[in-house]
Image (cartoon, rainbow, N blue to C red; front, side, top):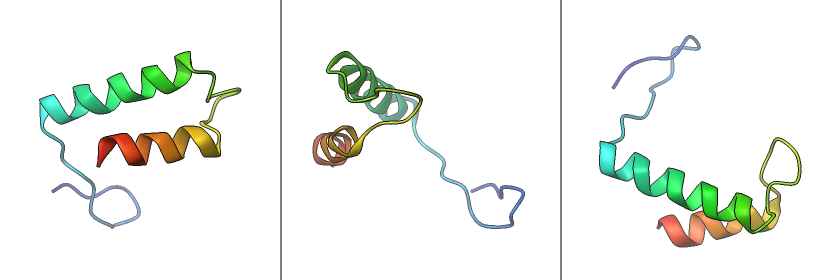
Length: 52
């Protein structure tokens, strides 16, 4: 694990896990759950439910 500027640990994700997460994010965007620059509560809830 690397360390970000604040000194805490950073996550290291496998390539296939990153692809799955990005696909889930795109799905939530297509569903309209990112009305501005951030996911809304429903979008985050769906990401958590579908990722885990």
